[in-house]
Length: 184
Image 1: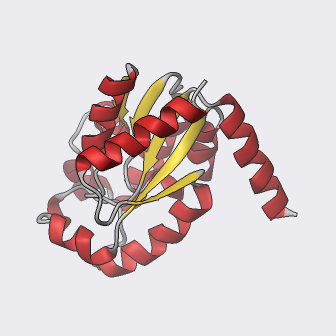
Image 2: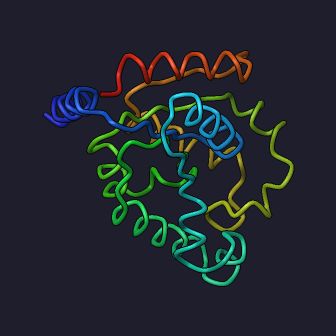
Image 3: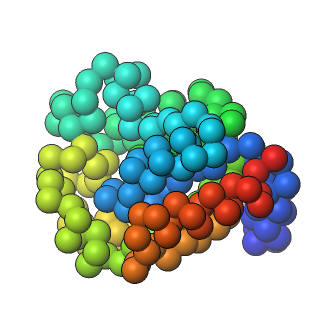
């Protein structure tokens, strides 16, 4: 029954999509490609990490250091639930998928695209894991975080893109095609 509901939600989302939401691990390229895509398809770009920083009036890492990872996730959920993201390209924080309510708000009129990279490529890209403002359990390894989150990305995504081996231009071309085909 749950799978049928999820399929119905995904079908409904695709039919009324006005925005494109990018989900994925830190360093998967959500913000970089999101800015380029928004410019290309003439939509506003939103980085939810920046919205969270504005909401808590601190940089993510400073907030995480003072309040803890659960407080950061709670702040992220408030931003995801209380804002509307109509006619936008949105790069979410990697932990957005921990908030079911937040993800349902995002999916209400948007297409959710999972930018997927193998763990080893993400590790190569990330040079500041402990100072990046990543909402994770104390001392949680990147590998553990990757496994935990990947399952959630797969649950909430409408479209899965395997980004391994894709250049920025190839990924941008793919996403522009999706926007032209799927967004109303």
